[in-house]
Length: 429
Ligand code: NDP
Image (cartoon, rainbow, N blue to C red; front, side, top):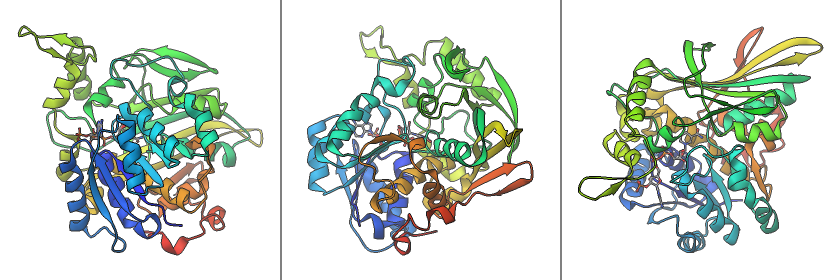
């Protein structure tokens, strides 16, 4: 059954979400894009027409919306008859958009954990501070809410679940490794919203060790990883969203997140931080103006979406899972490699936005055809990962698996034959 989609936000990730919804509008129906700055919604619609992304003629509409306003968001959901809301605005919006979905019955999705502007790095598990408090409300309303369904969090959660279910008798550790081996050619830039990007790294780096939270310092633990395609890569132990659900749901004793940083990024970041320019707390200038330093830094850095035209190289993000199988030590790595230039040629975005934007659209298709329409709040690893992985393989995000016998395509297609009812309606590009 067709389900109209309302996309909230008009940034780098929303751009990819909109293109991918357009490529699949035979199954998804009308597409509405709502954000604070309507001009950005119009620019996305223009680029969909330029690229010829629409699978078939259909509705594509821009709307101005302050998504912190729950009543205005409810009004728009009803006016557009949207049954699925893909929230890819900033993480400050999650709880208000979720409230609007619960009240209207629309399915909800996001790609990052809710944050409050004046708080950084709250008590783990982070989902328990906000989203999970609305679990019962979703259950009572029969509303499907899929949390954190970007790439990381998102696809890496599905990889973890898939590995645990299909490759091991016992699992000891999951290391999620995120390497961007690409180059944007600017002096300094972040690949997604700078404010959100920096907030991830300015405080405690939580890891899940021996079944308990461990507080680490940022850049304290560094490791070389032999990554598929992009080769040996240095990454640092970093706190990240997915640990805050995987630790509660998969019952694996050790779960860590590693992100690749170059020395230049670390130097600039360290200077900005030590000067106090990454603080989320307001300061008052000599002229009596109150400003948030982090918001000023965001304002002077390049818009992440503007990096796309010249970005070259690849990302490699995956889960290295270790445990036992048939009484023997066993390990697998499940991963995706994404090319910045190819992403730009297809939808006009860089690979970070691309890897984050395809998964919520795959999830929307799985909600539309009933496979993932679970009528409750879930994290990605609570859902069957097979149809999700198989569908993304056909939508431009290809998963591979590395075992002792080499690398191969991970395509659980046979498991999904029965699940994907309307396959001819899905644009398998
Ligand atoms: P951007 O900053 O580029 O875009 C955010 C958008 O949200 C902007 O268009 C902004 O509007 C809009 N917005 C902000 N406040 C409001 C409001 N009150 N009402 C309506 N719209 C609003 O971010 P990205 O596209 O890079 O990232 C989007 C989300 O995806 C973030 O939550 C980010 O953390 C997440 N993400 C997840 C990844 C994953 O793999 N899981 C990877 C990358 C990002 P305006 O243009 O007016 O500022």
